[in-house]
Image 1 (tube, rainbow, N blue to C red):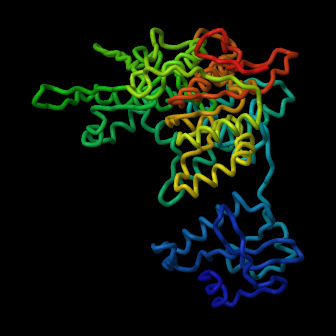
Image 2 (image 1 turned 90 degrees about the vertical axis):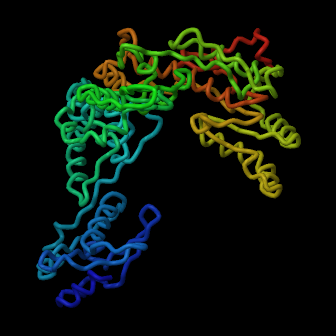
Image 3 (image 1 turned 45 degrees about the vertical axis):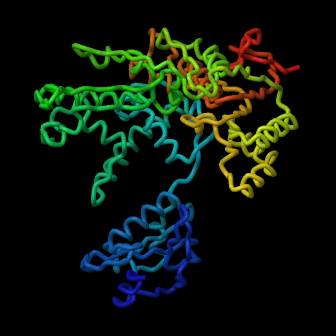
Length: 500
């Protein structure tokens, strides 16, 4: 209310034709206020700090004090990003000297529309679409404006206009962020500022800062994007250039990198990661000495779960010579095949009930959130029982991606792991980033076809004891995209097929 008091003190508020009642507006779960409403203009009125006012006023924001000017600036950003109605900003007392009619042209309305980028499942608000595509390009190690200019679309294709606009928007967006006080950077921008091509920036970094990277361990290395790889190469290259080393009781310690991962669990290609960097580690990180260690003992799953999952993922290009062996003493001698079922709600509920009564931890998985919502309704009585029994996490419903790193005694998979779309612009981006494995023309599409096999591997291996896979009946007809269920060999003992 401080800014309103300043306007009142200056004699410029309230104004004729504008209601002076505060209008509460909820944006992203936070409540903001417009200072009034101009009915003739069908616009909300927002007062801002006049430039002649000293920038010394502070207001309380939670537990801390912030400058009024900063708070007003953030409010304007929220209104611009998330408020879809018309707004008239009064930025100076001089605005109050004009009639509402002369201010009509100053009413702003931020464009609020959705756009479905080629290959996406559904439309997204335009700003989200811009951010998603730019982040993907940056994860591939590409410069957004340069990459968008390097893409080729049909002359009248709206997709070409979208990426032309993205090439204009993204530098302006980054400039806007850097102008904030303090400056703001995207996650990708921080990596690119210190990648292998940023020698000038590294010159400003003291040895004491780089010392922290002398011994670097990266977990989930298979999910790294090219931007992360370039950053690692930049840091290690700078350490080598400076000749940094540590003295220890065991001798000299030189810069080292340990990459921990599993290329069979690379499932984030849709956001720009690639298992290529892990599979060809020595190519990207040449060293006088590299040690490969394969940890093949599996301390989670019984052997048939492991074998079933591997039978699907082995159809992808990957590191050879891998095979998991059940090693946990409680499960290594068990043999429960992965059960295959047609979609059957009644059977699903019966099996979940059986495992709940046995005290098993249960995980219900699907690629679709709508399918999970339906499943949640089917077993809502069991979820309620679990809460009453003080075991609310005994039954968990998760997406296939969301289950990564977790485990349960019994896992229920609902639906196939299937490539859903093709994406021309992502294929072009892969080519620009040189992420093809063997020079293939549609490298991204091919990578996504392999990724669904890895997604099935991840989902199946969440199970310690039992895995049930409920599949919709195949529709047949025209050739579809790759799906994991096509790689199931029902003749193998680690599958038990109950489908009709």
